[in-house]
Image (cartoon, rainbow, N blue to C red; front, side, top):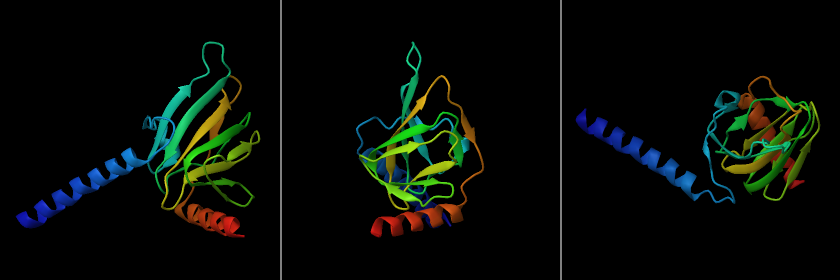
Amino acid sequence: MKKLLSSLTILTLLGGTIMADETKNFKQPFELGEINPYSKFFTGTTYLNNLDDGKSGRKVNISNVTFEPCSRTDWHYHTAGQALVVTAGSGIYKSAGKVARIIEPGDIVKIDPNEKHFHAGGATTWMAHLSIIDAKDNKTVWLEKVSDEEYKAAAKEATKQSND
């Protein structure tokens, strides 16, 4: 029993070390930030680095959001729209009623006001993007969770789309 507990302890510590190494080794132009304080609106682990909160007279909020593999936002929309600029890794963007797509560094996703969507890390890949919204006149409306089935279907759809 002691041997089993020792082995489990070592595996747990190694797992934490591996995850820490993955976090440290994910290269992106901005700092990772902290565990996302809005995690109740996400599935999986994401990180948030607020680069400009839109205060002091500026109207734009810019945040670096980093997604671990399979992590994702809930379905949501922004009353004044949103732009995403992918900076590292590879992820998925899905707008309700449209074909999902893979998003990679350099991609700019322009999201219309009130467009229901989600964004996510890839099935095996991390992804980071800048989220750009109007800080003054924009509200994020959070909706239902993206189920594992919806995520997998979007990942499959996006992969097929990129291979066509």
